[in-house]
Length: 466
Image (cartoon, rainbow, N blue to C red; front, side):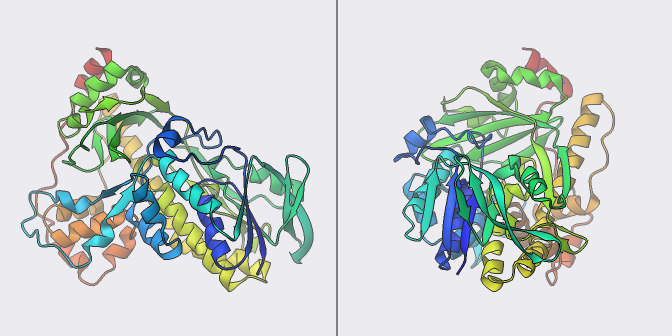
């Protein structure tokens, strides 16, 4: 058993801490924000402030992969979410009308998931962590640096603990960075004399405008949750306790979109989207919330086969983060936490092997989610920019078009696509299954799915101008 300090008490930090504590490790989680989780969902939404989480009141989703990992690693968490008013979502409830075979499959249940607003879901996770008998959660304590110890790998700094804001030193055999996309760990490693990790960083280029609503009945889903509509995209997500959110987003450089901050303008634009307009049929419970400046960022702590530091591992957004519109951050983060638990279990006493094993597992099983999202974001931004400029957008990836086309007709290809959407599988995994490429190829001559109806660029500008 080892002593572990987790820096960061968000959903992924607390989940990581609970997983490691379940294996008998001595785990302490440090969270700079001082307030305990509220007792009720209403208090979590209305009163809880998490200054360390920039997107705390922006839309989040807990996909089927989150549920699968939680049910394996954190039994009872799904029940806790349901008790707090979170809701079941089943994308198979709305099969495309072009699919004739509507017979349920034996394993359809695994595509279902439970989701809710971020403050409510985080309050459930935080309460479970506070009640965990083998986890010490210290709120209002900020980690401010790392403590060095004797090197376990020649020439590589070893982390032996953390230093807090009041000067306290907490010894640790392993420090886990769960401080999210704004982690200060790069400066901490530099102070130890470590080589800098490989860092990739770019602005995702999107700006988001979101409004939350409530009502006696959740809107019926007609089309996909996330749909491209010319030079904007629209995201509609169910929440907990009869709430939901509507988000319109586009390129940050698209200046007319700033008008979406005005609730009347926001309503006009969404009302002009036939498959999303009914999501406005509720009582607004927020103004229009704007968010921009979201960085796509990735850090790798093994360079040329050698760790830059031992005794220190990043997890979730502290490792890599992307544009949040796909809603995969918490699901992929929980997969990453599950991997961390496994490698700590396999290499508790070998710091060098631990870092290398975690890096290898991350690259093989989690990195593809990041790379696929970056590629999708770049393609979408290029398309939006072209439509805004009035020029022909770049042609879409033919393989993706064929997969989406096949999913509109073949019930098993549709299920495979939903596995990809909900993070249960990667596209590469789905297409490598026996017979899947052949199933998809049968629809090479079928009509591609028509564009989702919505305002073109000229109409959008009219709506924005009022």
